[in-house]
Image (cartoon, rainbow, N blue to C red; front, top):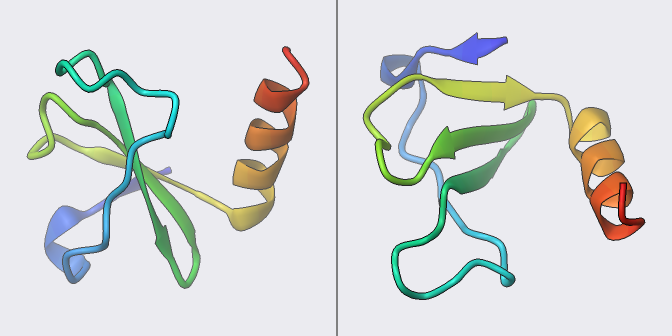
Length: 67
């Protein structure tokens, strides 16, 4: 589900600690009360995705498990 950037106050965006420091990052995330927002770090003005906290937890668990 996409989120309307005008309806949200500016969240605190972060990048993975595994992201490179030389502008190679591609994804940023921000925790919000209803879950997590995800956006392209190179085009932050574009549409973002909103996922539930449960979906984010499953994604993180899968990536940590090498899936």
